[in-house]
Length: 464
Ligand SMILES: *Cc1c(COP(=O)(O)O)cnc(C)c1O
Ligand code: SF4
Image (tube, rainbow, N blue to C red; front, top):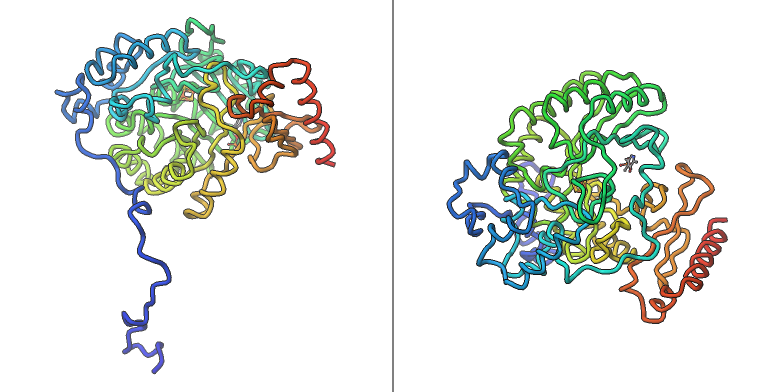
């Protein structure tokens, strides 16, 4: 009897011999999103109903911006030694602190030291580490590649526009701590506030460069732009014949997803631009920034569904952060969970060399290992590329593409032939992760220079 005979079912139960054992719960973990009124665990939010919690204005007004607010919010929940430690951390942080009630509610305050979300947003003095000796404030040299303030034109066909310098929350590890957020005790910022005259200079430059096709509107964060300003920026760029693609960058979906549900004008402004772009044959998408699976809740899923129904593509860029997602299984669940809510995992960045957050960096080797584990876990188009944004302005390089990697001394060398031909770009592993002998070499300025010269020499012969 042929299986092509339509009267015969093609398979019977006995014929289906399972080749794989049934999937364990770990393979379904990504679908298990936190739901319900989880915020009521936090003393300050015990009486907050769903309508209030989902109101983005309430979220903004009740964000934690200093140590006193932190204590008032989590009193009796977190261990007292942690609170003292955070108070000191606030004083020493290079970034301003701002944490939304949504994010506060996702932290396990009974064990805040180990919590992956606390680690990203709330500094604690006892965990800070000395900066790497090769570290500078604007390590990506965004200002060197800026023809006008707040517009970085590094790659030939794409540029980064920073219309403002505030965000709905501040990440401790922000690469733009040179500009983003308020001045802190530690750092006085380059000022890139909302300034239509500065924007006009940036637009003029973009219009004058026919090779520019792709603009990243970032910040700060486009969540903070008034809907009218967002439309104005988007429309101005879409009307330029050279521009084909616009990305609106916002951490919003990860830290205040309710805004997409409750700030209709903002969400409508994004839809309007995406639609206007489609009619012109141009792409307008959102780029967001989830870094841990716990940041994705049922609220995030609802918000992303609104954008999905409107046909708005959302891509994600994560940062590889020590103690947050530097573990292959956590990264796999993050990638799967992003796919589950229709967000495309685009990049995972090796942590930039940023001042004051050395405790958050991993070795390049961690990125190489985790990438190997994640690739193959889901659809290829939902698998992020792991990149190193090469210090010194080389741009993003596939982490695996180094010319030379001295694992012993923690020095990786990249080249970027289509970005900055003829130059080498060096990334340095955190010194804490090196063997004691290598740590001693780094302590000696002469040996330090010799190690760096040797790595450059080897990279040069490898590249030839
Ligand atoms: C990241 C970045 C871009 C966009 O790069 P993609 O690899 O296309 O995402 C553009 N300009 C600058 C300065 C950047 O840092
Ligand atoms: S949202 Fe982006 S720009 Fe803002 S603090 Fe975080 S990393 Fe920096």
